[in-house]
Each structure stands twice: as structure tokens, then as C-alpha cells.
Amino acid sequence: MSFLDALLYSLAGMAVVFFALVLLMCIIKIMTAVGDRAERRAAPAAAAPAAAPAPAPADRPLAPGTAGEVKLYDTDPRTAAMLMAIVADEMQAPLNELRFISIREVKEN
Image (cartoon, rainbow, N blue to C red; front, side, top):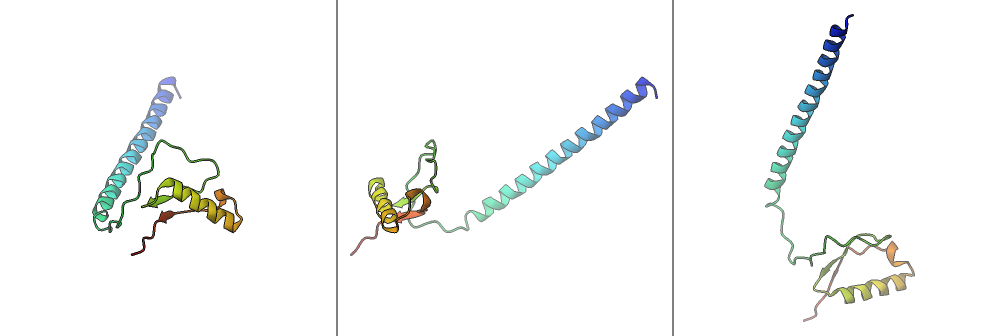
């Protein structure tokens, strides 16, 4: 096998690999576009919540050991923190082992 033959074989092999990569890229783009279109169709069908949660700043990282963010409905953060501390104390469990999903103030008539 001459040097020219070896060079042609290696170029053909690289061309096949790059063609396969481009083909995979196109398939992924098509699947992403189809998935996005399906999400946009399903989004209006979802029911909107009665009250919008307070927006949480995206630039604030979570503290180490936390179990996620809590959504507050008609409750200020100080009251929510006090309620979480009381619940943790009553349960005799560390606060970072409890998970609070949302806190809503119940108003009496």
C-alpha cells in the first residue's frame, strides 16, 4: 500500500465519521423542534394556579444542606422562617432535613 492509498483511506474514514456526526446533529435538532412544539401545544391546556407564588431571585444560590425552595402565598419571609423553625423544633429534627414545599396563610372570615 502506497502513501497515497493510505492517505485516501484515512480521508475516506474521516469523511464517514464526520457525515455520521452531522447526521446525528440533524436528528437531534429535529427531535428537539418536535418536542418544543409538543410542549407549546400542551402549555395552554394546563390550568393556571389560583395565586401566583412570590418570585424567587434566580441569582441567589441555595444554602448547603437545604431541601429546595419554598413557595410563599400571602406570607412574608420572616413569618415563614419562624413557622419552619417552630415545626423543626416541635419535630425535634434539624431544619435542613425537613422539606417545605409551600406556606400559605389561612384567613378566617
